Image (cartoon, rainbow, N blue to C red):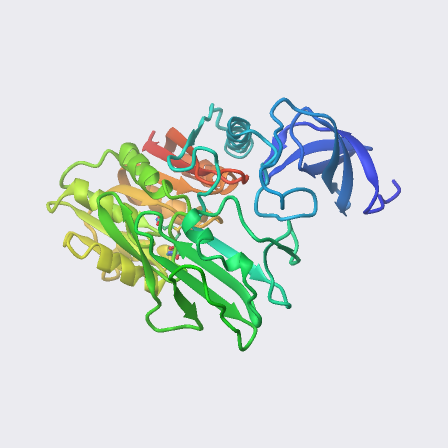
Length: 419
Ligand SMILES: C[S@@+](CC[C@H](N)C(=O)[O-])C[C@H]1O[C@@H](n2cnc3c(N)ncnc32)[C@H](O)[C@@H]1O
């Protein structure tokens, strides 16, 4: 088969959506992963990458449009432009159907689970814009700010991001020059209005005057400034670049979904794996009450410090610093400080790579009554669910949330019960 010139245009009948923000088509016997299109469209597409097994392409001309297609609200989206969003050209209901189809397909193909999925709206951004409270901006050598292009280190300069929360946009980061900087992360709390900017630099960076008050982190201070988040009736301190959900409605929505999944009872013992600043440990601790116990496990020292501070009024909640893999081993075999006589409930919220076989095995052996698995990646969730099934835990409920409108990403909460 002759190699395809990378600038060559090909005509494609576009098929189903796939995991990753693209749809699948075929060209001369080869699979093509096509961006900027929708299922059922006929498009002219530019090849962006060719491998032995597949091609990647960007739809540059729409010959027959899907009824779900809309004019992208963002002027920086489109083929070869900003890579931050994947579905600007689809209506919001269509975006949610696409995400549901991806989750259903991953569950079916990877875990052998047939399940209809509904992607629910997260309160706080009805148009799907102005929600992102944490933005990682990249800075070009000339000091101009932008966002990375898709699968590229090159930067699309922007002067506004439509999915950024107004509290982030108020800083005006994109409208300033940042000579010497390599990146600027803007973190804003929608609930309290606190703002922090984290600067990474190539050496000496000149910091411009921002349009709104902000605490700036440059280098590695011992005590980085924090934002306070107002969720589930308490204030949560989250320092520096520590993890917190980026959609203003997501932390509350997920906390509620985890409580619905686990139905904690007073006096139970619960473990919160990958606990970050302690969100799930906190809401579980309040439900379980002082006759029960909650143990959070987290590897990042600053996040552990935040979680302990955030939950200092709940003496039956403790936070252990360490890798989940290691601490679970200590609990199971009573080897470390973190000993528990029994575990009724486990919530796990691992990074995108998922928990993996070793952690799944430990969790499956330790948990007594229920498991809630919070995931931002349908592929690794499906892989881990298949593994849980081997240990006798089956999926009894699955909720999917549109915590990242305009992008391919989706947040999932799976409930597992023992066979
Ligand atoms: C997706 S966040 C979840 C945070 C928290 N559940 C929340 O909702 O705010 C994942 C967290 O896992 C932590 N982490 C990553 N790998 C870990 C490991 N092997 N052991 C313990 N914690 C880990 C990260 O530092 C991060 O805080």
